[in-house]
Each structure stands twice: as structure tokens, then as C-alpha cells.
Image (cartoon, rainbow, N blue to C red; front, side, top):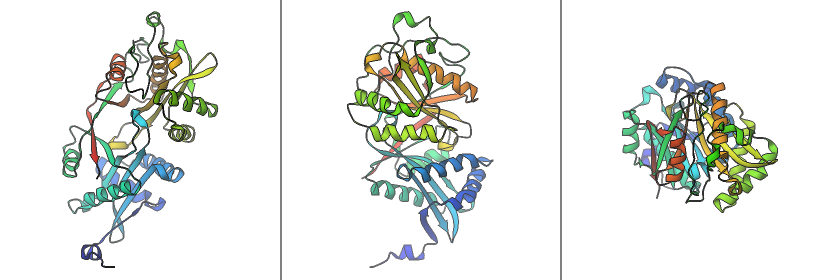
Length: 340
């Protein structure tokens, strides 16, 4: 076998991250953000060890010392999508090694891993004022995605704890049939959002009902995806804030969300809604509003100040639902790179 001369002479080595890399990863990250975020990286490592098929954690060594890393997660069905993708969530390079092509090598390694898994998209986010990251993404072939990041201050939303105001969701059915956020009847406007159903945290017995509702909404059997989200909700209660809504004794809707404390360069916790579904037989009864209302109360108790989600730019029903709830376009942009 003929070896590439560049490879034989390169001081760099790409390899999976290991538990022993936690300290240098935290140090590299702290150099970039001014403070250590060890709990965030500890949770990421634990999640990757628990579900290796859903995570990609790559390190780059320079002469035996960790000089950079990239963390990504496999998207299975979040945000109403069906096609798998890798979500690039964290990339870090030792300040002493910047401008030496380490970031480029990490992106190449991530693309190779995506190809090995049969994945053809890498998605990520960046703040529009983060000019260095925007230049990096542009240089490596990313473009604006077809999704819009929208967010809302927990206290300022139309359904926030301070206001407890009801809001109207769209009455039309979701044209994509991916998700149904439900719509309240006209006589619901005087009710508090949580009064229409028994909304509580997920329990082990809810999985079958969640998979059943998702199957009705999407026309596909995504039990594996729902089970992965469900397991994360139960095993990592420090970051999951997922809910189920019961009507007449059975689960009629569910909301999957997590508290993100570090993805995409964040330094403050943000709740991210990635899946929300309502049984079509219960549509129009305000379940979407009820679950969002309870979510806001829970987030306020956790002192999480913002909540966000990602919606297709063409899904006007879902955008209308969230806009009426107080959401607006975020200061963050969604990017995608399509792989050959």
C-alpha cells in the first residue's frame, strides 16, 4: 500500500475522544470562552458513552497532545425532519494551534464520519455577530439552511409565568403532517394554558403512547427515535425538561425539550424544543398551548431565561403557532452543508 507523503510527515493524529481527554477539552474551551464549562462536557461524554450511535466525538493530537476536538450528534427526527443529519455542536482548537489547519482537519474528519454512517448533511448554528465562526463555516462550504431559529424569553412570552395569557394556535392542520401543535377552541381564551389537560413530566409508561401519536402524525414508525429521546429524558434529568399531556386518563400529547448549556458556543443555558406532538383526535383542544405553558413555568423555576426551536421557513402553520406564543426570529442562524 502506498502511503500519502503528507500523512507520513504530519504531526497530527485524528482519533475518537476518550474519557482521559476531559481535562484538556475543558482547558481549550475555557481559553476560548474565559471560564471552564466542565459540567457541560461531562454530560456530553456520559451521553456519548451511553448512546455511541448517536454521538460523534473526535479529537486531534499534535505530537501527542490534544490540540482540537469536534462534538456532533446524529439528528434522527428532531424539528420535524425525517432525513438523518449530523449536528455540529462544538468545535474547539487550542489557541496556540490556530491558523495551522486544525479546524479544517476536524471538519474533514467529521465529514468522513458522516459518510461512514450514510449521512449526507451536517447542520449547525452560529450567532450572526460571531464573524469568525461565520467566516469559518463559509470557508468550509456551509450555507444558510432551510430552517429558521426562533426563540422567546421565558418571562416575556404570551404564555410566560408572569403573564399567564392564553394564545391562539393555527386552526389549519399541519400541511407536512410532521407535527400537530394543536389549536384551542375559541372558548379556551379565558383559560390558563395548563388548565385544559393534566401536564406533567414524562414517565416510563408513556413511551408506547408517544410512539403511537408520532406514528399518526408522521405516517412513519419512528419508535427508535422516540425511544432515544425518551431514554435521554429519563437518564439525564439535569438537562431534559420533557412533558406529557393527559386527557381522559391517556396520553394525548408530548413535548420533548432539553436545557442546552453549551452547544454552538452558548455560555448561558437555553431550553430547546425539538419535538412536540398532539394526537390528531385531540387536536383543537389547546394541548399544544397547555404543554408550552407548563414548560415555561418549569423553566422559570430552573432559572432558564430563553427557549428556542427550529422550524422550516415554509411551515407557516407552525411558525404562526410559535409567533402567537411570543417567539420571534433568533439572533442565531441555521447552516447546512450537503455532502456528496
